[in-house]
Structure formats: structure tokens, C-alpha cells
Length: 191
Length: 228
Ligand SMILES: [Fe+2]
Ligand SMILES: [Fe+2]
Image (cartoon, rainbow over all chains, first blue to last red; front, top):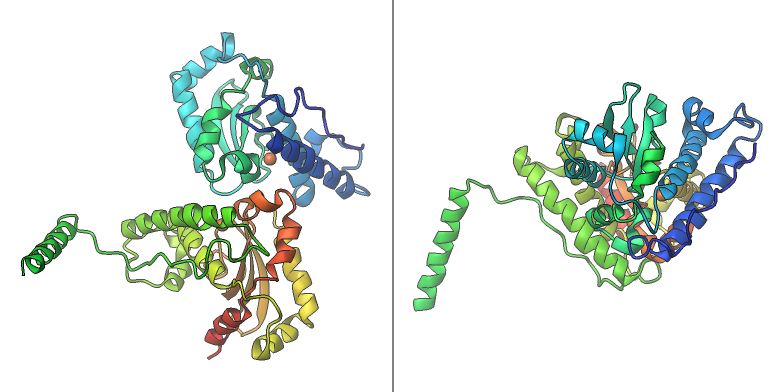
């Protein structure tokens, strides 16, 4: 199965100034595309040749896992954003956040801390276990909570390439503004 | 006369403040950049050097000083610390590595660098990698294929042989957690912050340009220190 780069659900300049056009051009157009190309090359002649991304993520390791998970993570990350986002969680998700974190601001604070303190490259996640319990996870490099049978709801890419053009060393500023383009409607749809 | 008294008073006051906080002055220094920010333009731009040295490096240093105070590391050598790094909290590994690795990185580059290694070092490279060209190829491969953040290293193993290492984040070959122990003599930072403003996703171009600024005299010095 040939993997394809999924289309972005908005224009490249739609998230500026939170995420600039230049960052999206490179992040989506170069990095995300490279993971797709790499995976297509790596799976030729392996048992993953006809597998879907989720199966590859669950069953592979090394370069195949890294590239497959990076495709999945980036698609999930880019799809969370909208130029006209729903700015707060509602309904069931809002209730779950209050139950597990106390309040939306306490949740954000905890998530921001996880994203800011992750050492090196990786992803901060909000994920749900099979009992409907929410938790925040730090994953290095291509790490993904699917591997631990958790359901991902939100992710923040904290590889430096995600923010270096716009924020340089100020990762906390990127994480703060990240919420301004995060569409809670999309997140609710993932429950 | 009056000025002298004031200076003396200030000195005494300073000593008092130190004592009151019961802090030992740190034995770890923040090294000056041995060239100007724009001196390595063939390899890296001025803006990147400013952020890299003045923000990233300084933050690693400041955080390491805190970790050093908290773990009574003052007076110890970095080699000694790294030999036992797994016994300390993770901050010592991450920030101590960030401090030491960058300090070494600045030193092994020079605006008058480039060219080729000579003498004993060149001989050792040929012995360990069969040719200089092959060494370049293997080092570039280590630097370009490292997934995520980290460093490419040229190091001397316990039998005196050279080897290339690819280590994640701020780890280095002196650390007890490294898969193979060695004394590093050349370092290349491949965290994205090291090259993103100039090269973006094109890490391979950054790695290729590194050869233009390597201070082989310094690398040879580092190598010589390992010969005993
Ligand atoms: Fe990314
Ligand atoms: Fe660095």
C-alpha cells in the first residue's frame, strides 16, 4: 500500500501568526512528506508492504516504526488546528477534563509543563485509556500512545522544527499560543 | 584611601553574603566563544550562533550549575561526573552533557579551520577507518541518520582506537550510559536548533559544511591528550 501525504484542512497561511506560513511549508511540505517517502521506500519487500499505518505502528520498530509513527503523529497534529477554532471543550469532554484535572486551566498547565520539559525531540499527548480516564504523556522522538493501547486526543509537536523559525529557543511561548489555533470540536470528535 | 576602604568593605560584605547563603562558588566556568558570532559563516550564520551560544548553551550551563550545587559536584571534573552519571538525577546527565558537549563543539571549530588532519591523528584515522574519505563518509552517515536530537562523535576507545558514535540528546561517550565508552575528540551538534534557521530540513547540507570549519589543530590536541 502506497502511503500518501494527506491534504491540510486549511491554507498554509491560515494559522499565522501562531504557526507561520514558512513553518507550515517546511513542516508539512518537507518533513511530513519526507516521512511518507521514507516509509514507502522502507516497507518494500517487508511484511508491512500492505499494512495500514496503525498496524505498522503497533508491530514495527526501528526506521519503519519511526517513519510510520511520524506520518500518523503529524497528520493528527495538523488536523487538530483550525483558523476558526472552537476555543473551549464542551459536553462530555469538558466534564472529563474537570473530573481528571480539576479544571481546563489546570489541565492546560499540566499539559504545557509536559510539553515544555520534554528533553530533546518528541510529542506531548492527551490520551484516554479504556476506562475513559484521561492522562498526559510525554513521548520521545516518534513515540505514540497507540503503542500502549491508549486513545490519543491532542498532541503537541515539540521537535524544534515545529517552532524554531517562529519562536527559536522559546518553546514555552509556542506551547502557550498553540491553544489559540487548537480546535476543541476536532478533539471532541476523537472521543 | 577612602576608595580602598569601600572596596575592602564591599569585599567583606561579599564574603558575608556568600557565607550567609552557604553557597560554594562554582568551579565550572562559562567559556567565552573563541571567535565572533559571524566568524563561521561558511558553516553557520550569526543569528544561529547568537541563539545557540547565548541562549541554549547558557541555559544548559545555568541549569547544570543548579544541578551541580544540588548534587555536591563542585570540585569534581566533568570526566569524573560522567563516569558515574547514571547514579545522579537526570538533570546532571542532560544539563551536564549540554554544558560539556557545546563547550567542546565551539572549540573544535575555527574560522581558520577546514583542510585535513595531519600527522599522528591522520594516521590513527586511516588505521581505524581505512581511509580519510571513508572516515568522512561514516561520520556524515552518523550525523545525518541520527533520528531526533543528538550528537555525532569521534572518540578514542579504551584501547586507543578511534570510533564514531551517534548518541541521543546530550549524551556523550564519556558517560557510563553510553553503549561504548571513549574520550571524545570531535563533536557535531545535530539538534535542529543547531542548523534550522539556516538549513531547515536539510541537515545533510549542514553536515557537509562542517568540514570547512573543523579546527584540526584542536582535534589533534584532544587526541594527543588521550595518548599515554
Ligand atoms: Fe514535526
Ligand atoms: Fe546545541
